[in-house]
Image 1 (tube, rainbow, N blue to C red):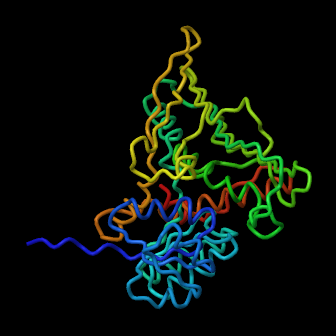
Image 2 (image 1 turned 180 degrees about the horizontal axis):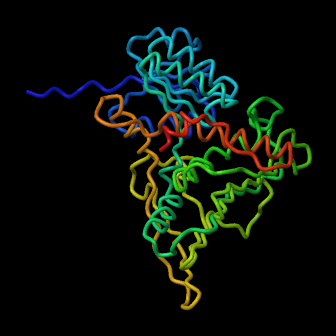
Image 3 (image 1 turned 180 degrees about the vertical axis):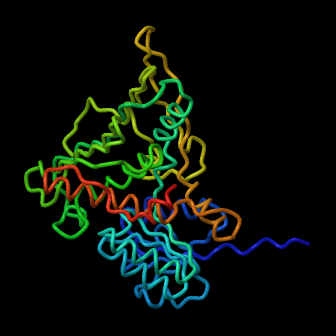
Length: 356
């Protein structure tokens, strides 16, 4: 008789926007995981959504619970590394929300700690399972537009008012490049690998803004150019992806809808989850544009794959070198914007060999 394995106990650290809107529903919908405890100072807020989940206020108490095997860190960026190191030392597996850490060197320290503890460490690069990215990736891999020479990835919003939240305060790891940059970077690296050089411009455009709220970063791959862009003063007329190749072009106008669905109260897996009704549009320079339906997205896949990795039946959804590479691009872009020059990634030969 085969007994079903016990689900992996999960402790979620933080129940702000990211913990509430993304991690909690995706963990609960993935299968193989059980969200047992949330670390929060507002038990009433947590229990309003999750009446069956325990709430703790002390991190050490959470780490001492033998029923918790996985710690998910969804707290301000400057807390990521110290919390991860403490969780790994306690023998827990760890998921860290993006960005991984504040610096590449800090990220290396956490990776080494996970290796020494023989624990799985994953950065939450959930946007690999967005409908817009999956659709564009499929179009590129099909060869229909030929070899890619120009790639643009935009996350543009219209938020002219500066919000009173930590991401917009003048603290380490705040600003648009640390917030949205990891999504843009990880998707680009998955498509094209490590760039030769990075050239970046960062700006603070809104009245009253304390941190950067506009980012334009160019990754160089020989003669190919990959443009990553984000801003907070784009009221319209923008696109999510534009890709030009040697045989044609493809455009994806609207973004994945899973975040909007989660904020509207939809539970992952419900009818319509991840569906995207904005098609890809192809151009070949000769015929009228043609449309192709977008693929559906499903960010549950991050936790589905993580559960399989924790059970020993699959590889982790995001590897350590992939996480380090994202941090290397973040850091190179910051240096490029400050110094006004092209910057190469500060990855060691050993790290580059791991990517291959």
